[in-house]
Length: 352
Image 1 (tube, rainbow, N blue to C red):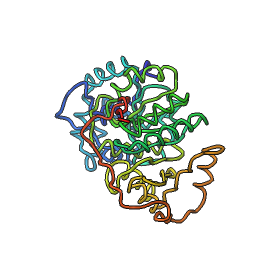
Image 2 (image 1 turned 90 degrees about the horizontal axis):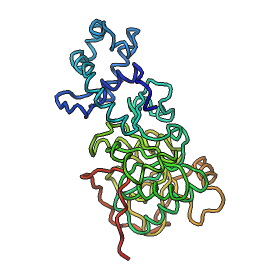
Image 3 (image 1 turned 90 degrees about the vertical axis):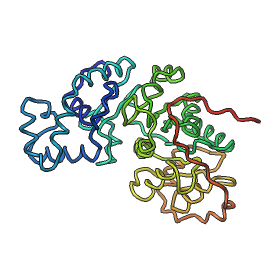
Image 4 (image 1 turned 180 degrees about the horizontal axis):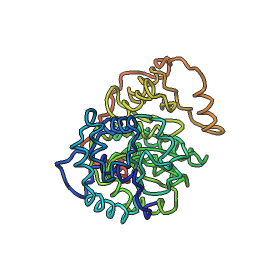
């Protein structure tokens, strides 16, 4: 896809919604998803299409909708053609592709997010993996030893059953799950919050990407650095690409793992959420179970994990009596947001 020319729809979406960091113009802020949604709504109201904003009479079209959108800002954004060409040259040289929400090949699973579906998806690797679903594995960056081992076993088991692993590429649970699945011969989708370009060209990612077993994608500029808001927003994208979600380790009432799981349980409900249960799990895990998350099947895992997931998620389970499962009052892990989540960073070494 990276060698193909941009469609007018994707070109317009990039000009409007991407910061085009290759151009380094900090004076122009791209449209937010909400602003872009409103623009599309207003264009539809007057019977126009997004790509018509690239035509010579775009100014006249903007006048028709100027009461609802900032026409001057849109004109400025659309005038960044040279910056877009610079950015595309950089991205394509690294094998990075981009698809917009208005294209037929936009990941269908992300359309489930409706107005929250990101206007753009950047990626490197086989696009077809984005339609395969699988198991979303998420959790804390500073996971304990028991959580590390559980993550690796669960991801490897899923991979051996040809169940794809979807995760976020962050240090800790995300990277452990992705690497374990790849080592077990499975396929992996990494939905990153930052540094897609750097991650896609790293040594550990290059071979599985070339082999068609790893696809790295992001809803944010391929050269974007870490941003807490983007990391939080990315969680819904991870779950949307999966059939089931597994929370390995979560803080209580803080951090991206918690907020993403709560959003699924109480608002979006796109993906059944399973949580690691048992002795010694963090307080956040216990609290998620009290909010109708499902306990992840205990080891050993006989038969098919997918069949167990499907059977459990179809039941109308009541909130669990978590006090009967394990003791309470364990300190939750911290949420650290000061560093890049670029995949893959070698997991931290533990002293034994």
